[in-house]
Amino acid sequence: MPATQSITTLLSRLWQHISPRRRGQFGLLLILMISASFAEILSIGAVLPFLAVLTAPERIFQLPAAQPFIRAAGIANASQLLLPLTITFGIAAILSGAMRLLLLWVSTRLSFATGADLSISIYRRTLYQPYAVHVSRNSSEVINGISSKANTVIYSVIVPALTLISSSIMLITILMALLTINPVIALAAIGGFGMIYVFILKLTQNQQLINSKCIARESTQVIKSLQEGLGGIRDVLIDGSQAAYCQIYRNADHPLRKAQGNNTFIGASPRFGIEALGMMLIALLAYALARQPDGIAKAIPVLGALALGAQRLLPVLQAAYSSWSSIQGGQVSLHDTLELLDQPLPDYIDKPLDKPLPFTQHINLKDLSFRYTAQTSLVLNNLNFTIKKGSRIGFIGVTGSGKSTLLDLVMGLLTPTEGALEIDDQPISTSNNRAWQAHIAHVPQAIFLADSTIEENIAFGVAKGKIDQTRVKQAALQAQIADIIESWPKKYQTYVGERGIRLSGGQRQRIGIARALYKQADVIIFDEATSALDNETEQAVMQAIERLGDDLTVMIIAHRLTTLKNCTQIVELADGEIKRIGTYTEIVSKEKANGHAFPISKVH
Image (cartoon, rainbow, N blue to C red; front, side):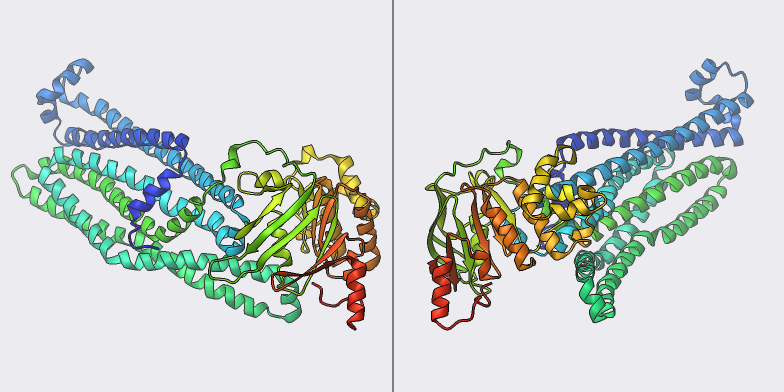
């Protein structure tokens, strides 16, 4: 984290991400804080006359300032002051407690509501990031930012910041009340205690920053180790590598917990020493006041008020210190969260869905080149190729030849480094990319299935109440999986398990194909989507796709050359360039002439 990023700068950045509605609620909370502070003054101010009445009622009865109250209450002698002042003191104490309880409730509710807003904003912004951004970073960072670090911002920044503001206001009002009782003692107390807390803050500042960096770093590593261990559970069980993954988790979790414990100790520990010093101060004051003429009578009300003030003052000072300490401990997590909150949103986010871009003729790759970063070499180099609407195009080539990258460019997931993707001679740009993607359905090699029903997975992304069941069944029929689904007891309401674990690889892929067909797109892209199917089923699926109509444009990366038998053209890529283009018959004939076995091996 840059050294210039102070806590105040980070809090200012955080404030920019809080909605106007929440800002208004924070404004009302500030008013409540001030009101609670005045209630605190009232409770401290009421104790002085109350104790004075207990020890020397005649002095209160003769005070000029008390005469309006005495006449209004119809009090005839000093002994009658005790009941009304007892009631007044009790009401003041109850009012103060009620206000502090209300303040706690409102602060907590608002803090967590704001935290939910921030977490949702991070998730929303992340989902709208370009595909290139998702490819370039580890998902553990994002998951940790949305879940763990967003919670850290609530507990370590928002709640403590509100507590710090509330404590500061309370501190000022309590100090004002104590100044009216004894200015010298009040200033000495606040000055002495305040200096101790400032000294402790300076002493622990560097250690808390180290702990903060550790918490931010290791919390991501914990998520990463969980994802890797549970995500590869088959291999973990087969290889017996549970101990290795437990060690990876332990190496991240142990320093994380240690840093969290250190910060908790640093935040809470000064309280006990300060309380002891406070009691010593009151004892010394009692001794000094008691040695003066009429010492005991004068000392008890003053000491009582100071004791009550100190009893309120010390927790407020501790709360302010602990809050600032907590904010320091969450400094790096706050910075990381702000980086996710600062992710830009696209211009189209609040606009209605674009109408599909006109597509009646062809897709044209014009001098198209692509590299992932400026430091890496070209993945695709100066491609020129035209795909006619309604054609079936197959792509082959060894691993790393650029097949999947090319289809990502065609789908508008990546932006060409040079050249252009054109649809009916219209270049695709950020302004019309969504309109082009409305034509496309994608079937990847690894099908993602949600832990929901078959029906919901086929109509993926469609609200349950808006699913067209007839369309679902038609898509399943075309994908050659309807018979299997119909044989299950719950049919289309069957749950597939997390990531489709209750289905075979072939069943998962056919559901992925049904999902693409449900979308009724006129461009379907298969990225080795039939690799897990047996030959017979694969041919049945491809024949079903072939019968969908001449308007459907299909692009296929195939594991087996036979999959591409019905393709209009087959494109072979090598080293990011088009090596050759031909029909299935032409390529097979040439391979046989070159002495290669059929089918061609390693076309993927």
